Image 1 (tube, rainbow, N blue to C red):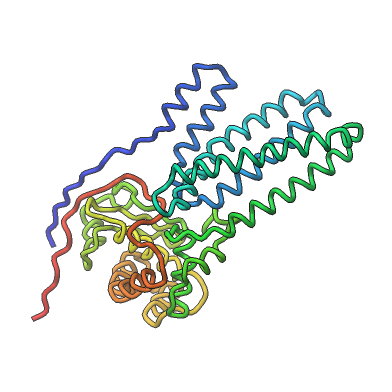
Image 2 (cartoon, rainbow, N blue to C red; image 1 turned 60 degrees about the vertical axis):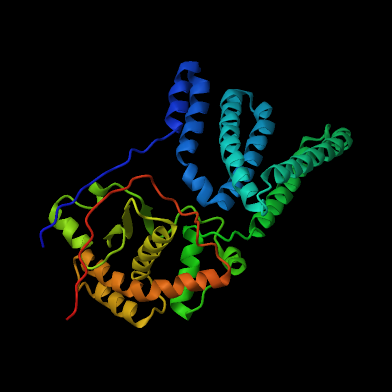
Length: 358
């Protein structure tokens, strides 16, 4: 099949670089802070996708920073290092906490009333801080002469703080799909033929291990990561009409997806589902008949070329994904948007012509 591919890329803009470069002009200490801000700004997609995990991480890191400040005077030799580490932790807390707070405010603004929700949140925070100040003024005379009692109260209150934040984050029910929630819902659908509702999926979502998924899924990567010749492009395009191309590294359990200019939220959701289905072929657990057969072939090493498996999973998804998508919508998931981490690269190529059966 003769094929010419017209490739068109859009540049990726990383706003954090400007912050990092500006920081180097303000001395070593400010440079470190600006670099941390810039690095987290570059990770802005992860903050949106995993807002729960980053919210909990920011709370724990803030408590750790306060602990370092308390311990700094006790060890004068390490005072500078301890205070610097505490300030560094607070810089990370400032970015991660502020970003996740904004993301959760958007989730809570059910009537597009972000200003109202933000005002109520700020007023509640002010009242809590005032109450904390009054309680600390009452407790200070009682514990000031006993360092061990002070540390005991700190650890008790810190434990209560972390537990309260964990319960608050666990109580959140987000109706949009990120990678963790999509994997949970898809796994349940493949095993039982049912779609989990948002409440059940959010209760099962991992909060401590959500940063390290077993499958490495990259959406919106540049085309040159997948192919190096027109022949390889032909192999990926052949047999389907979907506006995305997918590469699967079986040894690394890594899936990379190139998105077309025409790819919308539903296409991105299907591409992510496709990648997770490929990851399920290397895991245990029941699968539908066609996928179970493919898994046996993968484990037997019968298909050394991943693109053969990819082509056949395209055919499986043509039947499976419409049912899955309808199940998501019926269960209450918002499929018109998502919280999947997607890079900005896009490409244009000629779709494979449909085969007509006479």
